[in-house]
Length: 435
Ligand SMILES: CC(C)(COP(=O)(O)OP(=O)(O)OC[C@H]1O[C@@H](n2cnc3c(N)ncnc32)[C@H](O)[C@@H]1OP(=O)(O)O)[C@@H](O)C(=O)NCCC(=O)NCCS
Image (tube, rainbow, N blue to C red; front, side, top):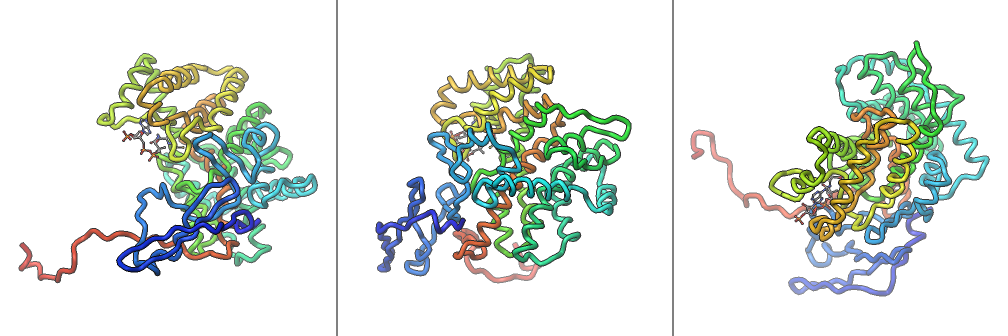
């Protein structure tokens, strides 16, 4: 579905006048009535550019993939509420929905699952790729590098038919790469994928089995991983997705663009926050469990501490994904019988923060990372793999966004401008003459 199909330019326009020149800028509305000023002619007509650090007011594209209403706490993929998809769908079905625009038919679903299942193995040379890396390598840069490296194994041009094969390869091999990056950090042998297992069960098998002992996949745990991946699958034009689009806009291939997205996701203000949440909860626990003291520290902006997993650039309400995960947290911790101490601390922290004027007035609510780490921890995913789990889910959204950008008739290389604030013209002086 082209983004052009779902937005309408209305007759409204805004006139901008600057130093004797003027332009009428059209107002554009999306399907959900969000309104934008199309500034495409602004610079050529008036000489002005816009300045918007952090892009908080900038729409970089039209998109028909994901809708978020941050004020109301709404998230939909291709029109479907996240709550319905979380309850009724599966990750591979959601991946298809994001990439193709519609839910798959039963036959499409079977075929897609079969294709993904058949492409999970890595080329044997990949073993040597892992063996060159230090043992304590963080799995996020390992995954970013491994996905980039796939481009050297599959060098076909990105034609219409090859791109579908690339997409299948990426979705199929990402869990294998993720599990191998973990096995490498343990010094354990890599475990081959099994075609008789479902997508997330296979991932858990590759993570936790070893040649001496088969790991029995608990369907509740596999379901929880599937749910987490659905919730992470897309989130419109965030930092990593914009990175994927920007890199892809240079006509860099899909592997390179996704690799860049993984690197962007690694940062603690983006995907790395779930790891930081667990570290924060463990720190609170180690200091005696006093959540009030931590909240006070997070409010003191001089302390540099933030309540990790709280606040969001877009959501100024409860993140709907956090609400789903809060319920799932209870089910999973009960099922796996692990300690629920971190969950208890998280819930107390949330209760205190949501009653605090500082967080209320700034509309800071729990985001998806606040509870996801607690589930990962309960099911035995090591902390340094949390962001990799996020990347595994987000992969399908990145692919969908990259394809949409390439299919957009208004496609151009991404190239923002700047307001230069450095020295005005000056001339080179030899070193001896410099004061
Ligand atoms: C997500 C995040 C980066 C959004 O940033 P942003 O939209 O640029 O918002 P700002 O950093 O401008 O924050 C707005 C105000 O709330 C405060 N604030 C934001 N998040 C906060 C947090 N988690 N703890 C304490 N204060 C916070 C800021 O200090 C700022 O206060 P001020 O207006 O008095 O200066 C930010 O909320 C954050 O750092 N959260 C913690 C990390 C996290 O959970 N990231 C995962 C995102 S999915």
